[in-house]
Image 1: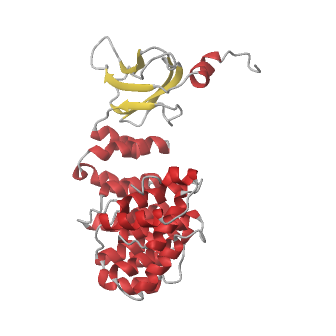
Image 2: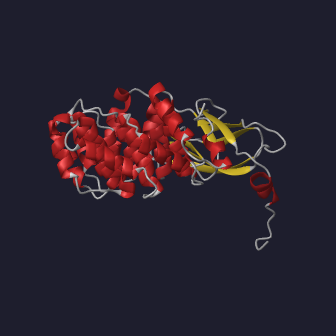
Image 3: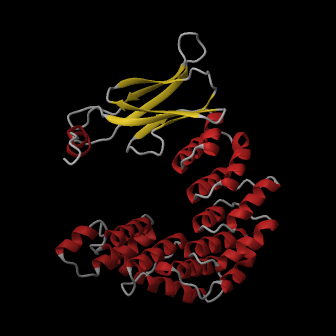
Length: 369
């Protein structure tokens, strides 16, 4: 109203109707002939069109970046099912990479297939973080040897944690040379906890050069990192499990996650006071604790494949809560144990021995069968 402009088209497609645009994009370098000197970008809207979702009308920014470091940008209204956007290139500059909706301003699904070299250039040079991130995601489908050098170089210059974490994921624990070992070493000491945890999670072996750095994360400020590191180290070095448990014996974490992982590892490797550890895990499943602790304990006992009467009662109790973040995991664990004949008999016996209201029976009715 203040600008005197009519935005009915915008509210019609985004507010009163549903869906979102699906853009299939491709481009052609049309600067090789005498008559045409442009980059021609073809846009198809391929979303299913019905009474609730139509063809979208949106102003979209197109950018062509050239090998010489320059770029041309054009905003075009895309409101047809098929549109060709011409970006003049009279100097016949060589294209480095092309961006559609730079910065990902529009809520959409984008299908824009690019080659390896174009994605490398976009990942290294795009001004906006989200465009560099999209390029790194696009590199997923290419063999590691074809992109490894680019990923290493990009990791060193990037600051955004999601890009660095994606690079670590695509390296997939590759420690075949000093360059990747050094990269993981940098990641384990990164100031961002998201990068440190990505480094731990993507190490499937720990060479001697990195072992001290990984072990130091048992004292990290992030509970998630401490928990994942404890799990990783005891898995790779079970002979040192007792040392790692000693180093973390007084750390509990959010939802007692570290303590529960500690108890699980202690039970798994049968290290010390295992009976007490099982008892404490069962206690964590009771209604004396909030739902995060209970769910963490449910999952730990499922991984240990351990169940007793008290645990079953606590699962029944949790299954009847209105908090689905507690009830659904409890039902899932009950279903898991219900598959074996011995555990099925235990669950049935305790169900039949209980007193249930009608609404409770409706939730637990599968267990007497």
